[in-house]
Structures are given as structure tokens and as C-alpha cells.
Amino acid sequence: MLGIKEIQELIPHRHPFLLVDRIDELEPGKRAVGYKCFTYDEWFFKGHFPEQPVVPGVIVIEALAQVGAAAILSLDENKGKIPFFGGISKARFRQKIVPGDRVMLECQIIKQKGPVGVGNATAYVEGKPAVTAEITFAIN
Image (cartoon, rainbow, N blue to C red):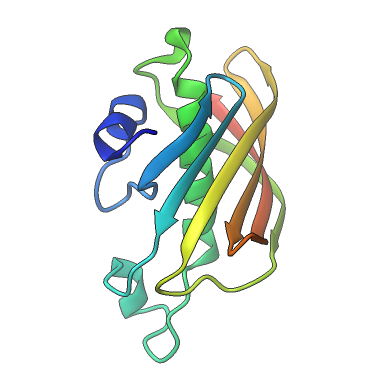
């Protein structure tokens, strides 16, 4: 299991934009599974939406990308590099994520050629898929 300190040694994201609390499974270059516990104190809930707080879809996609980044950046040849979005496709938002939800974030790298790759990513709430997407990345 990787905690915040170990995650920060892998990926360049920092508070308030580090969106992964821990990583329980890590297969370098292949797959990672992490978790994020969303609390009511998250900065984005003040405006999204005060009467009915919901995690913005782009935040969930970013959290998934960070888990994928941990898988890719855990390879020796990628340590210290920065992963950038190259594209997001097939994104589906199946259920809301709200304060109090513990979200399992899974990203499996399905192809990589040079610095560009693609990951299949799913965010689960209580074992059910909440968000799915295909994420393209470029490592620089």
C-alpha cells in the first residue's frame, strides 16, 4: 500500500490537486488501484453545487488519470517525468459521487508506444461503476 508520501514520490501532483489518498495495488507500467475519500470540505463543493454537492466529472477523470500516472511513472525509465492528457474518450458518468463516498479508482494501461499511451479507467462507488473513460496520455 502506498500512502500520500509515497504517492507524491511517484507523481508530481500536490495539494489541493492531489486526488488520490492511497494506492493499494500497483503493477508498474500496467495497472494501479487507488482510493479517494471525498469529504464535504473539498474545495469544489462550495460552488458545485451548494444545495446538492456533487463531485465534478472532470475531478473524477483527473483522479483516475492520477492513478494511471502512478502506474506509468513507477517504471524506472519514467521516474521524475510529467504525464499530460492527450485525450479523453468514451467517458460515461453513471452515478453521482457525493461527500462521504469512498471511491475506488482503477486504471489499466492497454497500450503504450514511446511516450504516448492509453488507459482504461473506472471509478467505483460501493462496487458499482460510477465513471468510466479511456484516457490518452503523453509523458514528457
